[in-house]
Length: 413
Image 1 (cartoon, one colour):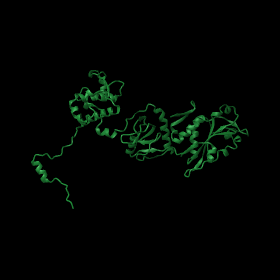
Image 2 (image 1 turned 180 degrees about the horizontal axis):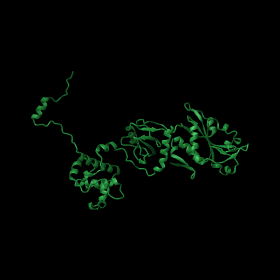
Image 3 (image 1 turned 30 degrees about the vertical axis):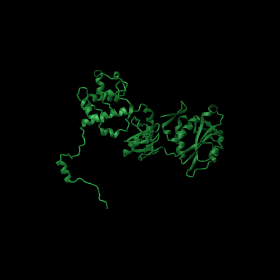
């Protein structure tokens, strides 16, 4: 068997090295003071700004307040020999060397005596201090930055009035049991319109940008996320997933439990279609148009529709329409039919009628016994709006819209 060639350092070896004057103590790791940590953290924020924007931070009233902060901070760091020495090995971009400034001309710099003291105060700079770099009150520690580096900053949602009724509706639906909350599964799929509870707040994914491949080779996209406290964020999809993973109490808010819908079809196509093996047929949504000669109906025939749901055949249901007050005591035309599978018909019908309630036809007729009747399920709504509402039910976003009678269309809440 071959002898092992592995060598180990013995106590005798260490003693011999010590006699020869060789320093065998490991080189100590540099420990930064809290003050040095804050200087380094402040410089790293400037580096991130340059990496994200491709230019140096600049002064100017039209600039973001944080960009102006970074511009002032960079000048202070350049002026301090102590800071330059501390940051020299970290300055891979040469930001501390003013000669490398190519992003903007010298005329754009403000002279020291032109910088407004109130602005510096709002930026957290104490101009009375000789070490004003260390007085920056808005600089987080490196540990804080690392923990939140991929979580976008929240800011005021300017159009929150459009989303507030939706959040209130969701809260009501949670109380009534129409919606439930379930534990968020790690890195689960996130889609536009999804709702979550994160850090005790309801969160709506209002918009999703175009997908791209991140530096780590994973698909990602920028989101517009609305919080129920009136703020919003433009964080990345992966960042939202990580935040939901990290919060052990995070929950997904379920969509209204209606099940899938099939696409719009003619009744002949519906009748001829073979049912998929795993789908349970539960009926149809039907849209009818009345053939009544009543003056108001005749004048507005193209936009007066009955929206109903049935578990049987539509033709059989309407076969005696002219004698049924439900159908305005007249024959009806089948405009379109949507096939339903695995769905709660009653919930769906109630949802559609509630959605178009403000456009319900208010008309009283007299039946063949001269008894006044007021038919339900008839609405003054164009077919395009009905089809869009059903499409919104299909993609789970119906709660984000309302029917606008003035424009005869769906508008986002």
